[in-house]
Length: 151
Image 1 (cartoon, helix red, strand yellow):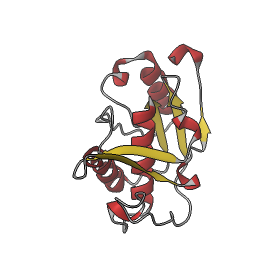
Image 2: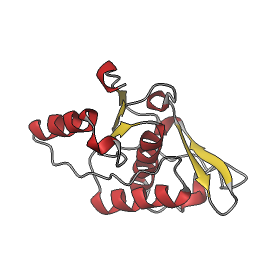
Image 3: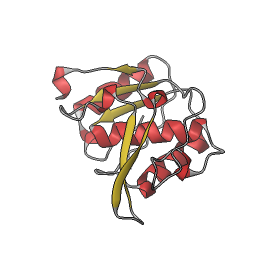
């Protein structure tokens, strides 16, 4: 379950966590999502996910949480990849994502980013001081759950 520290204190997060636990799922929480994610914060989420090797991912939050979750899913599904392999050129290599990722459910708590429907994950590349991203249909969440009580 991927979220940010602010959303972790909300009803949306509490309901999502309780629902997963009531369904008998073992849940691990990554709540270190950074608003305006960076390559460093994506790598932290990827390391968490690689070590955990979850069966599926759930993101609760805005575009930053969903994009961070997409990156965690990507790099834990392809642990052999270098971080820049899938990052858009010219900053990264722009390689295509090989194969499928794990299922991901996106639960937005904001309106406007549309990240629950896209195959992109946007971040700030700190070394070049540029905004870039990763784009692939494989990144698109399996399911988006839009609850008006969360917005």
